[in-house]
Length: 393
Image (cartoon, rainbow, N blue to C red; front, side):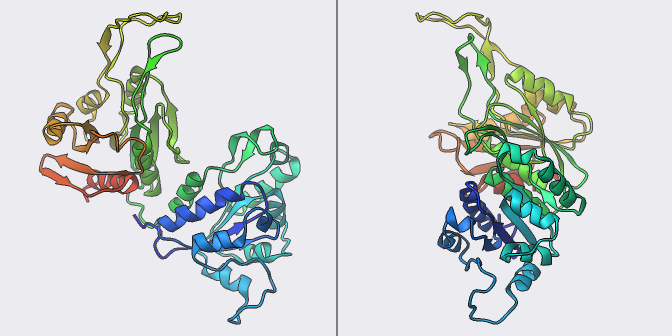
């Protein structure tokens, strides 16, 4: 869905190893329909060439205050005026310090000074720099002025250290920008609970059973609900998907844990989307030591049915369930719709494993009034279809 169609984003790129991630941010914003103008500092061009950003954005890249232009205009003012959003990614300690203290000595810092649009900065630096008093003071100064800050990640840094300071993942940054720019806020005041990912059930301390769910569908629902103004709780099991920033994440491992956490949020929730793939069964006995290699017979017992339990107590909340089928899809989905006391069933054909881990899906939506099959579309678009149904669109 081109949620940012017609929106103008000015992207400031500063010099750091995380510059390569800014390329992915441009792609993500373009996929949503945004126009992206890129300003690069001189040091940024040492990591990635302007040609790369020109190719991705389909626009000329600005690097120099005094470059020859075909059309006479004050470049930094014109860029600042056209921006619906000004994004600095990655944002080094240097540009944060300049912006906080009113220093305008190159194209990027000068344009930032002239910007009237919302500004989003995405810090990226060594953990010691990130936690330094100087950087902390500068960041707080900007936040007091209303500048938006995308939280850094934690992990292995380019310098070899492990800790805070990593640039947030590109999809997290794109989601953040979309939420700021998205004109649709039709879920404002709504509380949404999304179950997501694949639960696992242990056989012993080494082995477990699970399934192929990546969590991408659940995370897409959470992200779109956030972008549309909802308060989102994400009950999250094993996954490989990017988790949207802004959701209240509750991490779980087993189906029973997911059951307990989901039911704990029944009161006050307006929309439930059961996008997780919980294990229906678990081993009757768990071995505290590794089971030796041999012929093995495992007895399984049934796990609690999360969707059915929610359906029985949801009162006026909207409940969406998913039905992954290989045969007799619509028939089974219709049966599930009734058994779970659900308002909507999303049926997808998983016969050839093409759904798991994919960014797209082919679904049929079923409710009490009938069913409608949709062509292949992004999981974000499927998420919007679900949320539209939830609010009666």
